[in-house]
Amino acid sequence: MEEKRKRPWSFHKERPDLEAEDATPTLAYFFKLLWRKAGKLLTLNLMMVVRVLPLVAALLIYFFGATTPTVGNPAYTALMGTYLASGSPAATALLPLYNLPLNMPTLTPWRLVIIIILVAFTVITWGWQQVGATYNLRSLVRGDSCFLWSDYFYAIRRNLKQALIFGLIDVLVTVVLVADIVFLLPLAGQFGIGLMYGFIIALAIIYFVMRFYIYPMMITFDLSIKKLFKNALIFTMLGIKRNIVALIGVVLIIVLNFFSIIWGLSIGLSVTLILPFFYLTALIGFIGTYMAYPVIQRYMIDPYTAAKPADDSDDADATPQADG
Image (cartoon, rainbow, N blue to C red; front, side, top):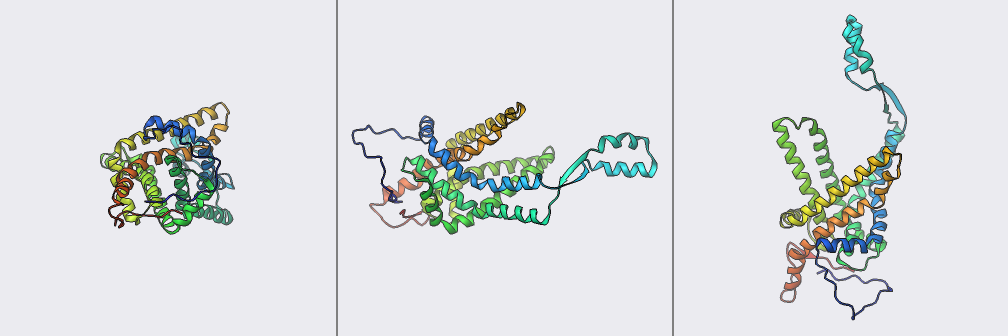
């Protein structure tokens, strides 16, 4: 099993007189641990938000740069053609309704290059940043000592190649699923496409849950990407109760943040638009890790620990990494 990494000297000392705390991963203990680790989670969130800041910057460059005027409704062109060809009274009456001005963003070469660099930075570093954050989140969930910056880069160095490869896969799968959900939404009313749309939604939810298992396994065991996917899919089924509770929690947090932003903007309180950047990413990651790690420990770590005294040979599907 993964050995504990050597830590720098700390003010915290052993207290043998203290009663052992019940650390059973229940919902009540989740809120206790969340309150206890809130400070480090806020700091970790500032490190994790680096993943999305380049994308936010790219969107701002695209939407708030130079624009070119155009019409907002494509039907305007057909109406204008009808009006010019026949002078139709109906076309004449409808033209003012469809001639709504619209300023479309214009991509100059330099703006396009900057946007490509920002997006490429996010894509290339996605897996590395997720691995570093997951290592810290795992320490917080387990109650280990956690040194955010050193642990963050330690995890990246140790999983440099695999995190890069899986990060690219992760981005590709996420983009494909999101694109399918967005583009099929207008057609979801049709029976056949509606069934396909429901299947894609279910697939997206399953993959979202699998991600919470994949990254902790990556930093804990020496597994191939194929086995990471296989084990994550199995754990998604085995830990279905914990997964459902975690999904409900994530959905509630996102919905509450969405409505708080709408409410804040409606009264001119723009700070609600900025607040999620200080806690949301780390909070969702903490929920996912708290949900996934006990399942991994039950089915992978505990059996290995119990079998180690009798047989020190490595499991073919779960070779542990030495830490430190």
